[in-house]
Length: 152
Figure 1 (cartoon, rainbow, N blue to C red):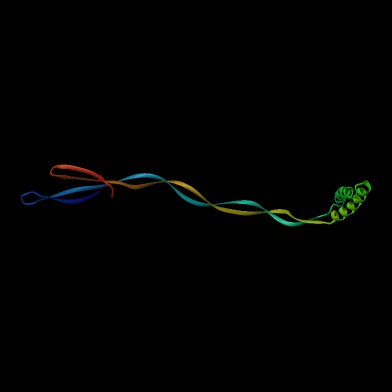
Figure 2 (figure 1 turned 45 degrees about the vertical axis):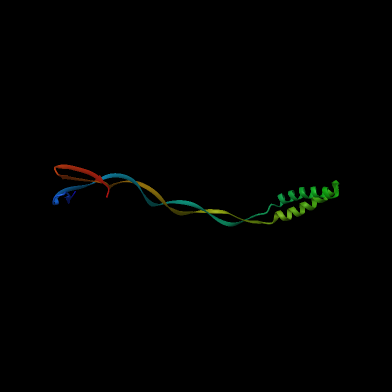
């Protein structure tokens, strides 16, 4: 609460008269609730795949079978008779068996390792704050009490 002095002057045809007025100013406040953000680090353990080169034994029988089928179809298509299909199947079987017998290397998951992964996560908390709302000034002048509100 603040007290202030107001000096008012009355201007009339006769000499000026001055009057001292005491005024009272009160600031009014209100409570508001706001959401304030805050961050926290959250961590979890995850399985991360480990890759490695894996060599697998070839499949000569599967390669031979596939080669015989393809060779037979091609032999029949080129010669137009069954003897060409038979020759194509034999030749395709030999080539397929040779290709299928070779070991194959590929990259595969060979295991897993545990790894800690962290991220920043935003949360919100409710906070009550007291903030300025408005002010009220009250004074008495000439025996009459006046009150008015205003914003600073």
